[in-house]
Image 1 (tube, helix red, strand yellow):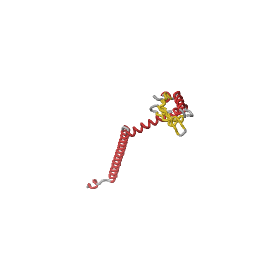
Image 2 (cartoon, one colour; image 1 turned 90 degrees about the vertical axis):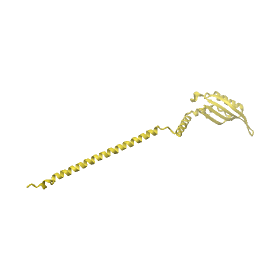
Image 3 (cartoon, rainbow, N blue to C red; image 1 turned 45 degrees about the vertical axis):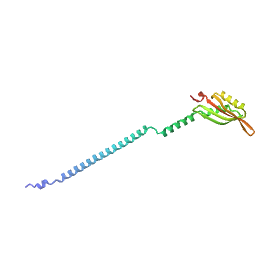
Image 4 (cartoon, rainbow, N blue to C red; image 1 turned 30 degrees about the vertical axis):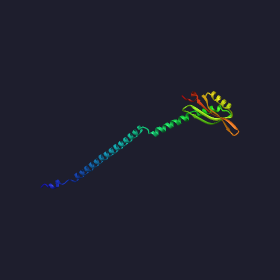
Length: 175
């Protein structure tokens, strides 16, 4: 007689093959799931990187603030002041110096291209000689005596003066 119960019972070899297939399918599913996880993580990293890059581009395109504009303007003015040949202006004024003249104020204005000198001289003639020497100096295009007055301090009498000098455009790069 045929024992059907034995036929329906799984064989031990087939059982091992079934377990092996189940394990392989589980490993395959885990591998596919892990690959999907890595791809998703990389895609999110690229998205974050793109957002960061776009934010930096937008920040770079923004208009500078009023403080930045003012700072840049002041920095440019400072660079122009430092680049100006002040030493040549001082030496030109020194070349015309006179032992009878004492300069009290030396006020240059680079933007206007002028120089204001205030001082005292022992006599009116010494002030006029000083003015003539400044007019002859090629560093100055024009020298003007603006003000002169007699100054008394006890027994000492001097001449107080104010001169306005225009710097020569060719000498100092002025327009």
